[in-house]
Length: 393
Image (cartoon, rainbow, N blue to C red; front, side, top):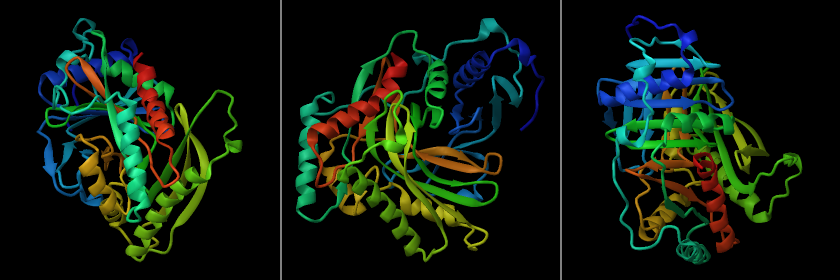
């Protein structure tokens, strides 16, 4: 990455610099990925100028620096953005990378007119905003579970919302960062993937600079209210069992690869924007266990997780393909930086939206078990969509 002449950062705010860089590179046909890690005050912008790559498998430990965006369907290729240019901002200041030829009169809002879009609309045979359709799908899921072949199914839905003409992706990204400090906030845009914005609470896999592997089990959802004491949140048997299913699946993956040395912490209640979840963390020292490729192995075993598909995986996936009725694309896939500052952090793509021509699609799902109630599961999806909808409004 070649340095260029810098501009005086003190005279230019973060939003202006990000908007300038992103609008410039999108106009050049380049792919961009902007993100803020959970509980971090650093934002990173990666530009791929040499063309994105479509890959079958991701070898996390052996991949060059970049950003990966993977769809829900494992049969489809993953999109890899090579890190040709990387910029880092901390507390509003540019700390890595340089901005050239900056002029305020050249700063453009990163609006809908300049965004790559993979599709203009979605063709379906029902009203996606209809609660009746989703509740019928949940009831069908419950009946399938009662038949005895599946323990959990995660049906999802979307709804389309109109966007104002002054919609600005970078401004929305900044608002999401402020509203959800514990989320992985992202803005990803390329001709191959279209444009997506999100604030996901769920880590899929990570490998830090000390070569420690991490993953989490996140399930169960309740509305968060101001002043709520999360230590006293009362969880129902259904929610506890839903989260326990995810934990058992992760442990079963460890057993499958004969890994016995891992730390398990939880479950505990955590906030994720306007909701709270039950969360259990798992950590492995890949050096001590002599398992240097653990992150890649677990990535293949975990995606899609039981929290976004169900279990057993094959049965749940078959049911969803036959009944869900639309293409999730990158929703419930995964995304994140690979080998950026010697660390890789991949997150499940939840609490997200896909930007279309004059509108956006909001996505949400709910974990259905034998004790589920269709009305409550529908209300849970509405609650999850509020995480993005409230910011847009």
